Image (tube, rainbow, N blue to C red; front, side, top):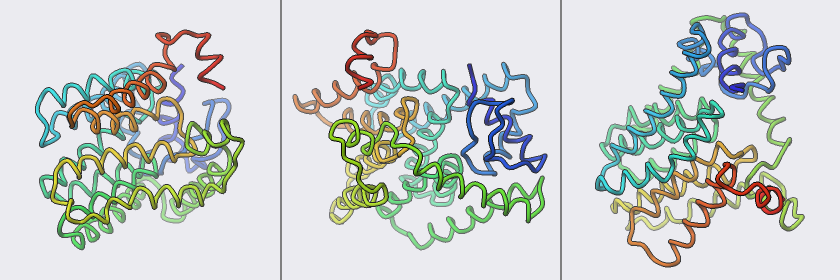
Length: 315
């Protein structure tokens, strides 16, 4: 019942044994490994532990990175930070019960924002890249760097950290074997892209309207909508504007993700919480956040009546 952790743990041993990380291993796990070879190397820190202990530390890591990131968000009082934490708590439980990495993803991106506000470009760049080496869409957070000075220096740090993270598995595998693993990763990502629509904008268009637009074109339209606010350069100096751009990025990277599933939505709901609790309440915003909470956070849980889930939510 903790198959995702088993996949993560096994990836380390598959890397050591020079087996294709992205092949099916039906006797060991129920699904494919989809993260980078570097993430497989990092899982070596837990893989040698018994599952009950390794899973405990894995979930603890997901929780602490997220909660400490929220606690250190600047420009918000303690009440707002606590409200965001309570708002995403059930989503965190859903993610942890699936032994997923999404709490860690939200925490890394939250910490990257904290470090950007502190003008620590080196550390912020590293955290964004760490998120991307877990789930590739984390790279989208580099849009936030456009809101801060010294962008050329950030590019330099990005190149440096990318080289380091790409090469880290050379500690345990040869260069040709590592190159083959990266090739296999790209092949898997291409195949994965065409396999499903997920709980995404694409899936919504399919289910509600029977519309099947080109995935690449749809993502391109979404990117245009995401970056349009960046044209308002006179607002870049406002903290709330930068915070809401973070919220937009967090929401975007889930709802335009063709593999989005229920445990992934802690990332998007983190964005919703930052947006809602960082401003005065209005009737419209209260309705929006209430509907998001009911149909995103509550609908997969036992709190939500089963007949409503089967009759309304799934269809």
